Image 1: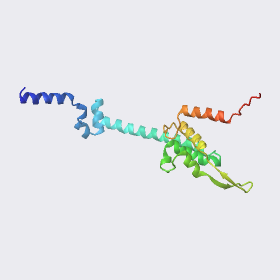
Image 2: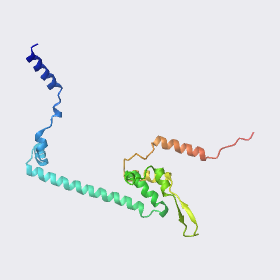
Image 3: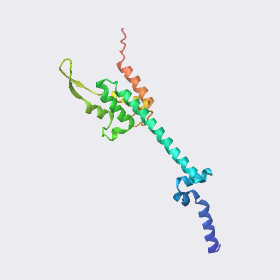
Image 4: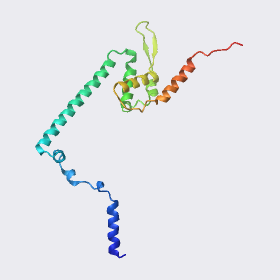
Length: 181
């Protein structure tokens, strides 16, 4: 095989294995969105521009409705809540939404330990320790995730693990039967 034939064959092999999708479409890189839409739909650029403006308005409107709905859900949970559980409810929301990382709360257990403190009882005047447990934070985390349809599972147990823990708790708490000889 001559050097020219070898070079031509090598080019064909490279061309055959080179995926054309890896080559950027320069026209698409420099075209404006309305130009791309006009070309794809076979409409004028002005019509495509109107479609894009309408679509942007619809997306903004739907996004605003979704935000208002989620805020309504959040406020409906926070307003009637008992004062003692408010911290746990807010922590649950933070863990469910993934914002607990920004507040550097660590795990649910660490957040619960930070929330323990003495509170003076308004009825008897004695100091009582008010605690927020990890289980309570976890309860509200699950509630928020379900209510707001959040998919942040970083702080959630698997359903199988949850069921096993429930069985273990029941076995531990259930009174043991003693057989009389």
